Image (tube, rainbow, N blue to C red):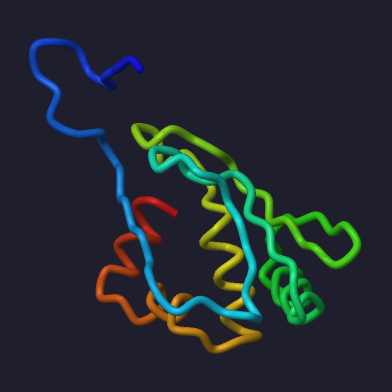
Length: 126
C-alpha cells in the first residue's frame, strides 16, 4: 500500500473541498442506490433501482437533470471532479436524492433537505 498526498511536502493538512459523510441506519427495502466508492470525488453517476422508478424519472425530467434508463434502473449523470475541484463538478448523487425525495419519505434522504448547511453546499459544492 502506498500514500500519495494531494499537496506538496512539507505541509499537508487536508483535501480542499472534501466532505465525508457516512450514514448508518436500519436500511430500507425500498431504497437501493449507488454512486461509487471514492470519498474524494464529486460523483458523476448515481443509480437507483426500485419501486419508485417512474416517479423518480418524472421528477428528474421536471428538474431538467440528465439521466439514462435501462429497464427498471435510472442513472443520473453529473460531472465527476476531484474534491480539490469540487465546484466544477455536478453531483449526480445530490440530483438523484432530489428525485427520490419527491417520491419517498426516508430519513436518509431527508437529512439533506433539513440540514442547516444545505444552502451552503448547493452554492459551493453542488
